[in-house]
Length: 443
Image 1 (tube, rainbow, N blue to C red):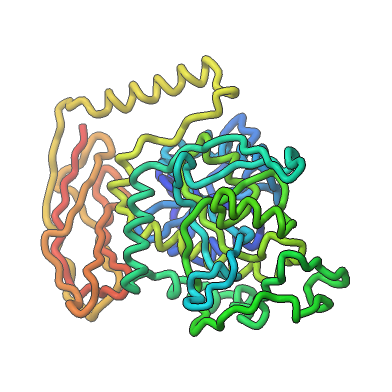
Image 2 (spheres, one colour):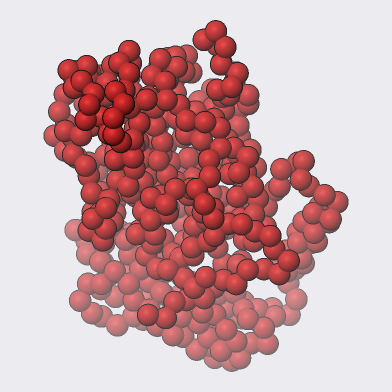
C-alpha cells in the first residue's frame, strides 16, 4: 500500500517513547502510517521517527536508536525532535511507569492503582504535574526536590478535563483502542488479575528467575477483585528521576509526603522545554519485585489514553498554539535566536493580505450506507499561482442520530489545481451524507 508523504511542517503533535514495547503499542494505534522523511542535511540527529495520523492529527512518534533512560538523554531526544519538526505544538510522553499504590480500598477497588491502569500527570500546587527528585541526594530518609516544572498549555489541560468527563459518562474510546491493539498483537494481551500481586512494603523479592514465582504469595496485600479488566485512569503527580524506584519504603514516603501516584525516568528532561502531558501505563509497583510481564499491555493502555486524548482536541485549536521550538537556555546561541526571529517575521509577513484571490464552493457527498469516512478530489475553478490555504466546514450532515455527533472535515493534498476533501467520524458515529463548504485563499 502506497504511504502518504507529508512535509516536516505537516506534523503538529510530538509523541515520545523510549522502550520498544512503547513504540510497538503506539504504532498499533496509528490510523494511518506515513512515509518516513529523509534526514535533513548536516543533521547529527540520533533519533528515529515514525510518522502517521491519529484521528485528525498528524503525529510524529520519536524514539532513540537504543533504549535510553534518564533526564539528560531524554532532553537531547526532544531537542533533536524540535529541530526537525518546527510545527510541533505540544508533546505526549507515552509509556510505562511504576505505580505508587495506597493501602487497598476495601469499598471501591477502582480507586486502587493496579497493574495495567493509567496515570496521567495532573498539576498540583506549584507542580506542573511532575515532581523531579534526585535519588542520589537521598540521605537519612530525606530526599532532594530539584524543581517545579512547567505546566502544560491550557489547551491540553482542558482536553484532559474533557476526557475525564467523557470517561465518567462512559463515552471514552480507550477500551475500543485497547481491543484493536490486542487483536493485532498477541504480545499485548492482558496478563490477568491473578498475576497482579502487590507485596507488602516490608517483604523483599526472593531471587530466582525473572518473576516472583519464588516469592511468598501469603505476603501480599488483600484487595477486592475488580468486576472488569478495563483499566482505570488516575490523575496525579508523577515523580521523575534518573534511576528506577525499586524501594517500597521510599516509594511510600514520597507517596505520602508529596501525594505521588507514579514513578518514571524521562519526563523531567522534557517538561522544562517542551509543553507536554505525561501518560504512564502501570507495569510494576516501584519495588524490588519489578519485572517486565506487564510492560506490553501497560504500554498499550497508555497509548490508548493518548489517542483518546487527541480525539477530543480539534486540529484547528492545535494550530492556535505557538510552535514549541524553544531550546534549553544553555544551548541557545545567537544564530538560534536570529533564525527564530526570521521565522517569526516570515509568519507575520505571510499574514499580510496581498492581492488575495478567493475560490470557494460546496461539495455534496454521495448518499451511501453508513461509513466512518468519505473523500473526494475537488478541482479549483481557476489555477492558482502558488499553493493556497484551503479551509472547510460542515454546513449540513446526515448521521446516525442514535449516537454522539462526532464529525470532522479537512483538506489534504492541496496543489495548484485542487485538493482532496475529507469528512470523517469517530466513536460510534456513522456518516450517511454531508454538505461541506470550502474556501481557498492564496496569492
